[in-house]
Amino acid sequence: MSKEKVIRKDIVKQEEPDYTSKEVSEALNSTKQQSSKEKELTIKDLPGVGAATAEKLESSGFRDLMAVAVASPGELIETAGVNEAAARKMINAARDSMEMGFETGDALLARRETVRKIKSGSSAVDALLGGGFESSAITECFGEFGSGKTQIGHVLAVNVIKEDPEAIVVYIDTENTFRPERIKQLAEGAELDPDETLKKIMVAKAYNSDHQMLLAEKVEDLIKKQGLNVKLLVVDSLTAHFRAEFIGRGTLAERQQKLNKHMHVLLKLADTQNICVYVTNQVMAKPDTFFGDPTQAIGGHIVAHASTFRIYLRKGKKGSRVAKLVDSPSMPEGEAPFYVKGSGLVDFS
Ligand code: GTP
Ligand code: MG
Image 1 (cartoon, rainbow, N blue to C red):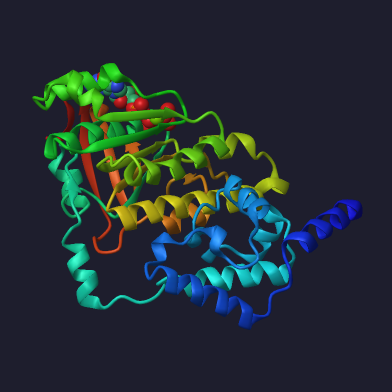
Image 2: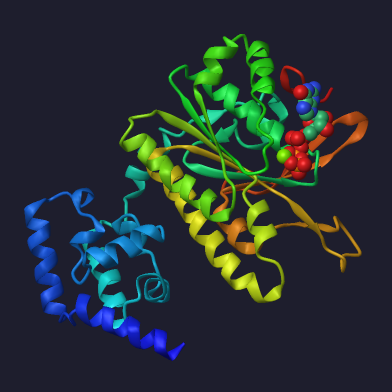
């Protein structure tokens, strides 16, 4: 342990000279002058970040200035092997270089006007959400097995293409439950060409939580480098890998830290790219509950807080499903019963 620390310190010494804050601001000012747009800066432009550190940061998911700007010093110390002072300088420099600040209410309102709502097929479910599944937001569905979480993911994929033929869907499948046959059936129900619809859905299987996190980070590349018009990102299931890999109390903090990072990638995608992010989540038994529903969502407050809309799904009467809105920024809590049919979601009547 201590030996490792000594080795790390050597690396730090070679790579991370102890910059004064004046040097940091000068370095940043000069890079700012070179290019007035912060978007063109990369983490390599941060003072004290050499090629080796940049590589370590990038391989740990810190791919842009925003990731560094919102990181904690502890995360950078751990991933890049830098000392605390260097980590703080990197974070402050990244923050200084970005417009991480305030937006006027009217600018926000103008941005809200670009928000689209993907219809589910059930008018009751759409009404619950104020018109449909919103872009620029994360909507989480949690519920027991067979409650319809995956089905909703498939339905949204088809419906967003129905509403916008140019739309591309990215589907991160962690449980191997994406079914192209089901997409074809839904596309037929929506009077779309089934094969053309499938071509607009990009599916990636995530084999573990790291892979899942990496895939989510790659979505930005699909948009920026490949120019894809991604309108919907499905992560089904958001939590299954995390739950399976981090077992026992001792690993909880690490799991939550990783989940937090993942959620922030999703939030940033939703917010900056105006994407509708739909994630599914399992429930676990809450044995100490005497009243109400004895289940609770996985992922605790990290997933709960990052999700803009939260829907609890359960099985209802006569094979129906019930969606209950449990958290939303603007809609009252409520319930909507619906059926999953061959053609998609339909109202319970
Ligand atoms: P887990 O992933 O196991 O936690 O469950 P889930 O919530 O994702 O359940 P899912 O969305 O897979 O829902 C399964 C239910 O949807 C089944 O019990 C069926 O009632 C219904 N369903 C699944 N496929 C079809 C289909 O092709 N046609 C119709 N009509 N219903 C389907
Ligand atoms: Mg499922």
